[in-house]
Image 1 (cartoon, rainbow, N blue to C red):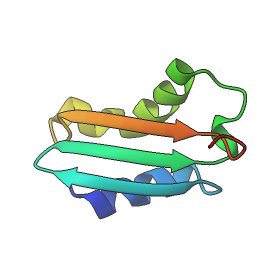
Image 2 (image 1 turned 60 degrees about the horizontal axis):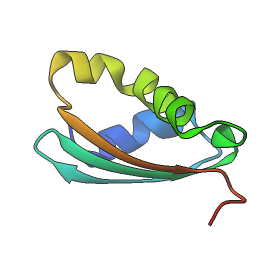
Image 3 (image 1 turned 180 degrees about the vertical axis):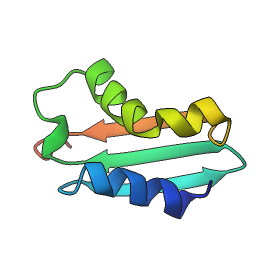
Image 4 (image 1 turned 90 degrees about the horizontal axis):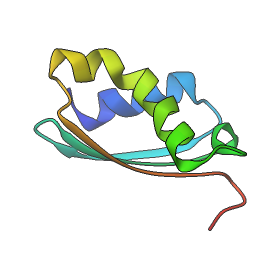
Length: 75
C-alpha cells in the first residue's frame, strides 16, 4: 500500500475533501480538510477515516496512521 492508493481510497469516500497522504512502509500521515468533518469532534473524524482504511489496517498493509482532519472553516 502506498500514499497514492490511500489517497484514492479516501477521495472515493470523501470526494469533497482536500487530501494529502505522506509516509511509507506501513506508516502514513493523512491531512484532510472538507465538509465531511464539519460538526464532528476529533474522535468521530478519525473514526470516519479508520472506517475507510480498516480492511488495510487489519491486513497489515497499514501499520500506523497519523491524522490531521479539519472542517473547511478551521485554520
